Image 1 (cartoon, rainbow, N blue to C red):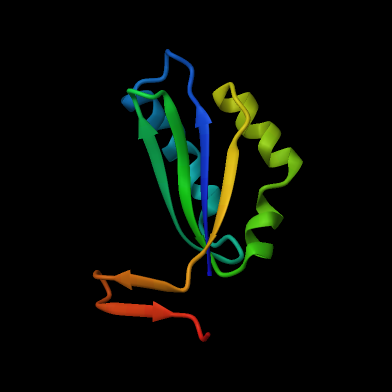
Image 2: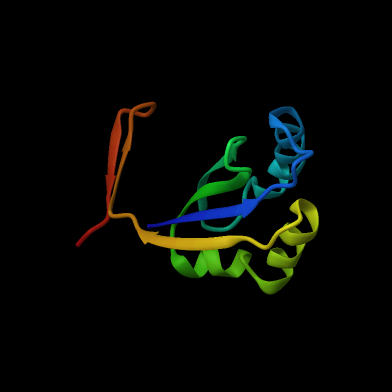
Length: 105
């Protein structure tokens, strides 16, 4: 699995309430997305950073979404291009399902 952390600078006029509205507006398009296991939206008022943490089945699934067009959409919507970082994710502890997900080594 792959964890992608996507961050972007937010304009000064986006507070927590406005960020939540924007995030809720985009959330439905991620439902049922190929390879996406889970997505968390992020907001940090102090540093003016927004973004998401995504858990993907494969890096190819993530890269199929983070196209130049998607990056341009993020830049237009929030006023800054995204920074995308990828991490191998070999183990996930899921307390809600009481499971530990581990990829075969």
